[in-house]
Amino acid sequence: MAREERVKKDSSKDIESDGLQDRVVHIARVAKVVKGGRRFSFSALVVVGDGKGRVGFGLGKAGEVPDAIKKGADQAKKNMLKIITQDGTIPFETIGKFGSAKVLMFPARKGTGTIAGGSVRIICELAGIQDIVCKVHGTKNYHSVVRAAINGLKEMVSVEDYAADRGKSLDQILQLRNTKSKGSAK
Image (cartoon, rainbow, N blue to C red; front, side, top):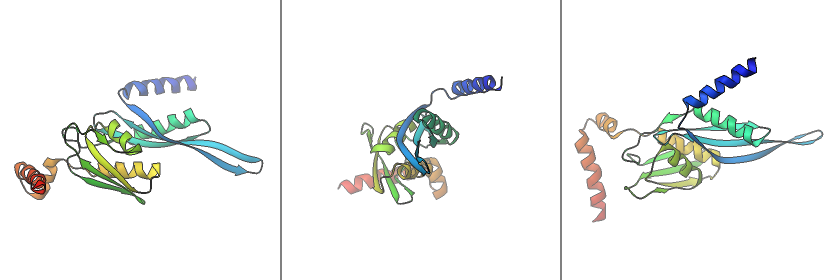
């Protein structure tokens, strides 16, 4: 009886989270050495997003790969955060750091596409960012790169909030951004 109630709760949870996509970034087979030999288990790094500015990641560990992926997806759904975007790209350039991983993210013109490698590309696609240029420096460890990219995107602020913090009007901020790009081309 309790198992049936759990199944009903899980199915209603899927209906609520409709529209979310999950992608596996990395699956690792982990061995634990015990007296009788080795015991193998799996860990799965999963990113979940709705393509409209919400994204999250999770790490699931289990004895079988599908169970690890399901646990990672559940954890990612719990840790979703809202990403600030502007016209399909990020409003400002940012640097995300975690450990020795550093992810540089730059806004791109419309039509550029997602120029990013590996796990950063997955995060950007699931967050709904169409035009962005990214570069990963330091370690290429999947976990560190995902956390660094999420940290960088989490620090994003909208152009309106940035203008309010600086005590300037929105027109002044946008004019400054446009003159910088034109001035450097000369």
